[in-house]
Image (cartoon, one colour):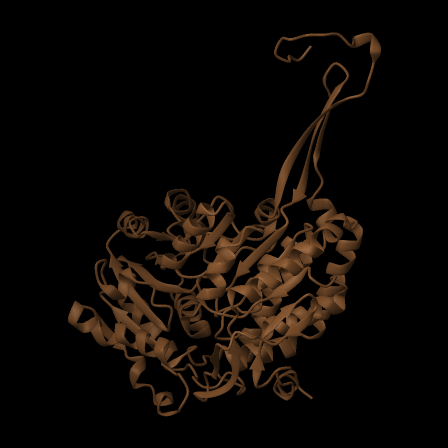
Amino acid sequence: MSALEEAVSVKPASQQRVSHWIAGKAVASKSGRSGVVWNPATGEAQASVDFASAEEVDEAVAAAKSAFPEWRATALSKRSEIMFRLRELIYAKRHTIAGFLTREHGKTFNDALGEVARGLENVEFACGIPQLLKGEYSEQASRGVDVYQIRQPLGVVAGITPFNFPAMVPMWMFANAIACGNTFVLKPSEKDPSVSLYLADLLKQAGVPDGVFNVVQGDRVAVERLLAHPDIKAISFVGSTPVARYIYETGTRNGKRVQALGGAKNHMVVLPDADLGMAADAAVSAAYGSAGERCMAISVVVAVGRIADPLIEAIRERIGKLRIGPGMETGNDMGPLITKEHRDRVASYVENATAEGAVVVEDGRKHAVREQNGFFLGPSLLDRVRPGMHCYDDEIFGPVLSVVRAETYDEAVHIINDHPMGNGTAIFTRDGGAARQFQFDIEVGMVGINVPIPVPVAYYSFGGWKASLFGDLHMYGPEGVQFYTRAKLVTSRWPDPSTSRVDLGFPQVR
């Protein structure tokens, strides 16, 4: 049986109803509210997902709070052992997980396998938690006095994750959170929720105690309760900029530590000396992979000088060779979008582009695949786009690539730095000096040099600048460990009667 056949043969554990995972077991919701889980490739409803009430969120938080004291006291080596087992289980079941992603999100099977692999990197990073939580020690800071710092877990923490990476982004969050000794409540997207329960079961199989990892499905009711719940100490979020700002402001107002990753408008600068074929390959791959539903997708190419016309033609040629269709069919390059409403919203930017003064080079609305019942939209290419147009200013989050023409390097940098979002960017050039200057000048959190999607490896941290990140710390990696722990500083002196005396002065180093 091939990997694809294996993935297709395994159906969701709760094919008709997806609900919660609380205290180590699946729990059917009593709220009476639910939503539809669509198959984006067919346009058919394939399951329903329960929406948690505030009381059911409280139940999950209570389970996490109850499990925290024992989990916090668990030896680092034991936590590391469990993370190693989890890593092996996820790797062994990667094709099954990818099948969930393809059925409910719509991305191609190979793309789904890539998502699992990048998420798994974060579990592997968390396997080294004994090393990551080593503190600092200063002997003889004063005569007979030692000073040392330790890092301790926060308690119950929560993650609110987006539809576009329903396996990877939860792993970004819970791997470090749990390894650091916290307990975790996950609120996944209601659009593709099944993989959250599958991961919960793998965590249980790996030896994670009941209550350490919990899942509440739902909508805004669940989110609002997590933001307000007094026992939630920290919240991680990935989503659009308006929602990220709201999560950050509401969570911090309620006394929580918050990291909220917002939207993106990622630019790719192509200088005149760039390798044309390499730049065109990168632009097409980064713009249309996963139907453009990536926060690190390249949505704007800034073509500098004379390279603009040949670059557009090279991109157009490559677009014509893309195969669009169901993600479970071998050979397709791009699948559908997540919902009909989102597909139609993305298409509206192409529809309105001409009226705003852009040139529609390729119109994805005319792609033959739209004759199917799924939520398909072909790749679109817009030329002569300028700041101020909706197709430039907004995060489209779909298969629409805009080309902005710049006369000079300085103009290209100004265009990028002037945009309110600063998630990711890239430059394509053969000039090392220009590349180094770009990384110095650009006001963006993640930079690629001849790399179109510069997602950091798991032992660095992920996050943008400006309106792409709300909070002090980036996600996963070393900053993720810092986010899920707090420092405690200890100043220690053991009794020596010969040095003891009454001294009302402010303590000094002697």
